Length: 121
Image (cartoon, rainbow, N blue to C red; front, side, top):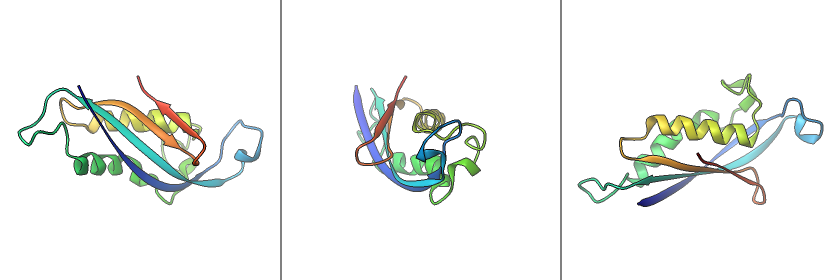
């Protein structure tokens, strides 16, 4: 089994609904997103997936949130844009666009250098 990961970053704001505290007000983060995939079979070039292809697929999913407010964009216009909900959403959206034989393993999402959440199934 091979495990491969890439990282990307977006800058975006959000505010939390049903939350008492400073995060109920709009605020921003430089979100670091790590995508971890696995595969058993190598292609003819000897890769499970090219790093660049995984980066491009990741950007297709997360890039629409860059320099935006999560709360303004579906599904977060209705779903609370917590790190937990974002990570799960990114995981499932990426899983849908990965080529055959490449499986999602985990999404790691950092709000800050100190605060990271991981989602996997």
